[in-house]
Image (cartoon, rainbow, N blue to C red):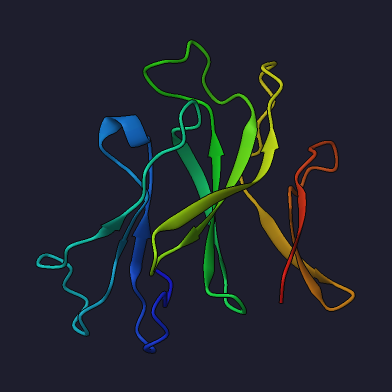
Length: 137
């Protein structure tokens, strides 16, 4: 639950295995926490990175970051590689801001935000993982 549209009410953000009918989706809260009649904003998946692992909402820029790993119908490997996708919920724009592909079973289970020198950093909590991204504030 994240307040995506900045109206003071938590909205619902979900994702799973994109190819199993669970794309990244946002349901804006109508004010009563009943999402039954809300049409979600959905995002296209990224080929070969159809498994959603974690989200980070960057409040300063109103951007949603989605951590992904491999999986899907067209791949013979699962949970391999790391990709970080940046989403704009209003325009449904999507971009890849980090990608580490070594098909050796290496993947990052979640992102950890922290502050360093006034900047927001997204990184893996495992020093051996290559994920490290400085965000705009």
